[in-house]
Length: 156
Image 1 (tube, helix red, strand yellow):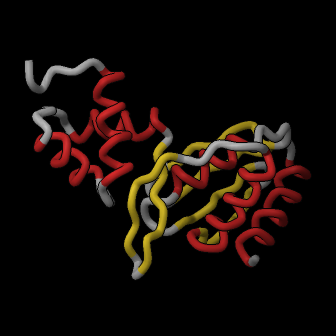
Image 2 (cartoon, helix red, strand yellow; image 1 turned 30 degrees about the vertical axis):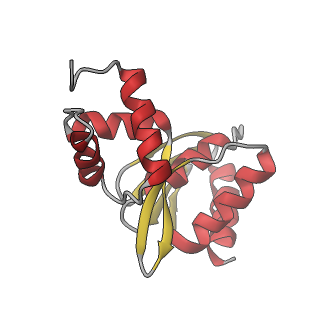
């Protein structure tokens, strides 16, 4: 029956679509799925994007597209995090052990995902919106050190 796929089947379709098409918004992804006979809401696509850990990558001239997040060793994560910080992070601020990282619109979740993948003991956790990441450091001292480190990443 067209339009009724399991979550796994739908997510596989999404992976196939982003592998062959340049999809830059959730709305575009919904439209690609509809063209293939898959009826889905943007809210569902948003959840799928988070579960599949898709990230928006630059394709030039201020445009972006969704791609599968590259998972690899710890060094790969640090290198990718440095690249994202240099390209998309606009500011890092701190209050005691809490940091706020401001990014270009649409890039907070990708940056937060990589921060989470570092699995550092000094980072308790992150919460990301569209352009803001809330980072909780374990202690005030670790928050201060983390802010200095993130500023250095941002500046290159």
